[in-house]
Length: 325
Image 1: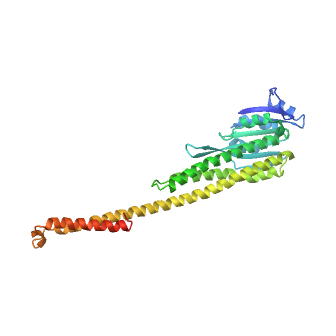
Image 2 (image 1 turned 90 degrees about the vertical axis):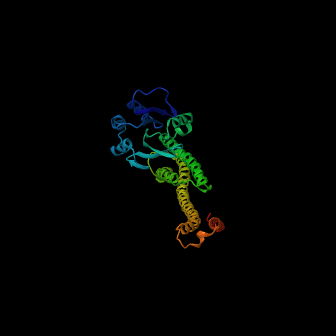
């Protein structure tokens, strides 16, 4: 559905509501400084038909925008741009990364944003741009920069949340407890991989925008795209370090579990050895053969108990010194 459709003139939003899309585009094309910003959220093919017809959008780009599930990219169709950005939302309580998508059509006198998912809402972006007419004078390029900046800022916010969870896992693994963190580490590593798929492919897209290698990018907007590129590189480096760190933590946790299992087996073996001595002595004297001289001793019973106790104590001390117990 169309969330908002507004006409911008000389860096300001035209306060009068536009009757329909055709009228807005006609007004925008009447001046070089005017443009229309159309915002849609999860439109159906039928809902997008009017926009496609009025703006003469390429059918392949329209298909990608409606169906979503694309990797970050920038495509040029004639004098129009089609940009795909992956949005990220981190659900901290579940340690789950939820991905979405923003498709952007940019051409002469118009920009269309198509959002899928709950990540990186654009209402605040629109309000912030409308409060500052400096960037809006760059036309649709200013909107594209603001959208990219919002998406990448959300990346950096997610990296902070991920870092907090990874530090918790480190404390859990190296804090001396016996609880296994393998499942949590593996799940977080999988979510980090999902994050990586969003961040890394965006770098070449931002490079092309920052260098002005695609049409309809205002020259004054290029430095702003370079700033967004720098932030995205920071997020990409953080994701790479998280992946490596989680791998190390996972290996360390598995090694700890192996050591703990070995310690447990040594303790079990030590107690079995201690219990084996009195068991063996009791088995021997419990056979009750007729010609066993010990059976006639008056001190035989207490002597047997003393021998069993002494053997157990000696073995316990030896195992304790060797740190098996």
